[in-house]
Length: 616
Image 1: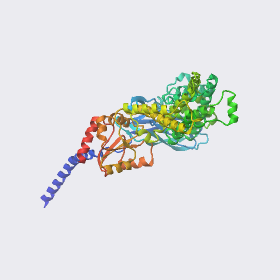
Image 2 (image 1 turned 45 degrees about the vertical axis):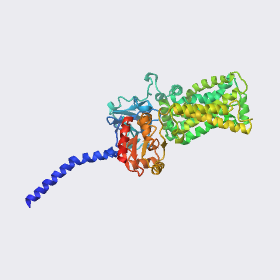
Image 3 (image 1 turned 30 degrees about the vertical axis):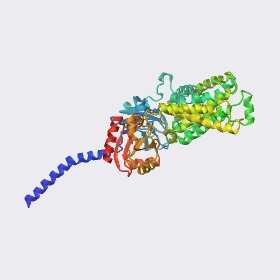
Image 4 (image 1 turned 90 degrees about the horizontal axis):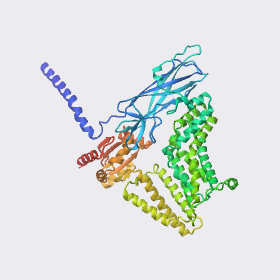
């Protein structure tokens, strides 16, 4: 019996060893087919907070340093980030007796990120500096400040979903009689408080000018920052709109064009002065305004209204008492110019740079809304200089020889351009406007044909006012075709060249179609901030061989750009660690294959072969 017992133990340990060695390898090989070998979302950063002094006295100013360690092979977006990307940001909570002033972010290293182009990023170790003030009535004793770091970690293949990492910084508050010593000097050595990125420290900076009482220098720097903003790519869409607003004006007067331009810029000034102070007061991010569908819808509504006004459907006029007063200095059209200026300020919001960020921080932390209003006013004036020039000389277009309805032709063309721009902004809100766009010669040929037919039917030498009902119907159909063709051309240029997949944008609808037509399903999880997602669209799905194979699938594209209850549910259901994620399923929602990150066309064809052989 004793020998039998030992034999049993020996066999037990042998089997256990065999299972330990072999079983995981076998299981992993099977799990890899279903993507279950992927790691769950993990923190790719560690954060530590440091103070510049060992103790803090009431009424004193001190600095904090946030040291961020980024895992090898990963990076996060810099601050400021590339257009459409989520910037790394320290979030300072409302803490009694404690206010935060200037935040100093390091300059990011510019990398080439897929199809979105160059963008600044952080990797390895970075240090973020914060200037803080403790009020005079702060109680003596220890406190803990709960900070958060918002970031998005990416590597060469994928981007994880945006994360918020919480951390604590303890502070010891002591009386005036206690001795305070500087500490952590090596940590703070590379933080340049009081300087703006790219600014010459000898000339001073906005933050130093504000704190040192040099108000004239602060206004000068803000004005210069506005001029630089007007030269950034975000402002380019405003140039044809500006030309449309002023170039179609019937008055050839140079003075009137100049005055219209001033009113246009005043619209920008009012938008930045009011919205800038409001946004700073609530701690919101001004550059994210254009991500709000309601804001985009409101802007598009104004653009469509202005376009219809160009066609002569109705007139945008001020009250007669105000209009008569304005007529004495240059005529009508001021209402439209002012309205367009207010829209221009919001459209250009993503271009706001570091100078404006310092102003907004100053307004929010000091409560000086009066000074903040005028700083924003000055910033908008600087940004408006370009438009004053464009608007003034665009008005000279009306000096061209007039033969019949020449000016009506200009108004109709500019109206088409403005409404086309409205559709361009709406394409990110309504997937239907985006789904049919293609970058191909046949598509552009159709677009050109629609424009030509629209121009022929649209009777551009006439306005809606003063023509018969039959002609109004013909003109409306023509203008609609012209706008559609122009939108197809403008939107198609930015689409990936090559074949275009027929996408479904709802998960439930996709599986309904799959069951009805007995097809396999491909779920593509993407976001506008995901570089690898765009590479899949431009390089893999646009490949003719891949597109031909995927034509037999139900292709579902699920947008994770903004967090919602739907995206949260999908994240939990499909265990989405980051983007892009592509999952292949049958009509009964059985997972056949999944992968994360970018794969090229050749590898995708191999994946499709594997899926189809398994599904048979």
